[in-house]
Length: 163
Length: 163
DNA sequence: AACATTAGGGTTATAGTATAACATTTTAGC
DNA sequence: GCTAAAATGTTATACTATAACCCTAATGTT
Image (cartoon, rainbow over all chains, first blue to last red; front, side, top):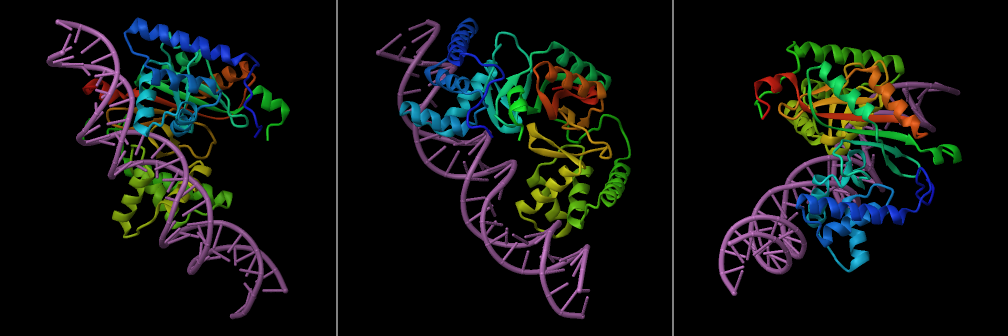
């Protein structure tokens, strides 16, 4: 596994982080939800990583970063809030969390997960949701939410090696 | 939540179980894999339930059923074997396992999960797999496996209540 | 049959993930 | 300021999963 996470495309990630935080603040204000310092800090840490972060990894980062030593319930509560607000998604297959680039529009969790570099990329396809819903309807099933996790190799890892 | 699990359609489930076990035996023989008594027993317990079963629930059932008291590694090893052979699927969102009705043809894990009665039904749609693959390809992603979990209400629960 | 080799399973301990229950602090509205 | 509600702190514990090591059972030789 490569040493450094490699995004699907190169970009200035610190810009992603700050704009994600700004948008989160805006949405929360609109909704009357409180993006407290702790919640904001957790969201920032999640965003700084292209790779999904586990709750305990987040706890360690919080400790490093801010002399703030929090216990599991604290970080889980912050994560629950961020999930409710659609600011992050949970990757069940990894027991980990990743920032949502489009929290303004409610949608389901559909991800491409590279097994080599660990990067997670959200799939933004309406077709996908439509096909899922239609397929479920054939069985008479009422869809409330869904989660899709696609494992494989991202373009970078695919070309560089793939091991 | 209703007291009894309700399958999407009524059927003689003991027949499902025995034919699943027979097919499993056949496939393992073909492949030179060993469906040992323990593995067979775990597979049977998984099949008897329409609802996904967790590893620890399985351990309890094994204990009840056969005076056989096994430790976690034992049941996890059996589950790993059954997963490798495609005889069961893992439902990540529930940390649980469910029998695969079509283990002869390799495929991904796509499930409808009723939040009311807990029943899991595998979606057998080629369209779905195709759309997933095509959508991933747009990002240049090489798909190796995927997992879809759709949460909602099955037809029975949808009509009877839905609470 | 004796042997070596390997797969399967038993056992103990521990790692990793998540939540219950209750105390305290902070915030917002009055 | 006072109150009620929300957020966070704290302790303990539940749930899920695997590491490491050992023994037994099955298989394939000679």
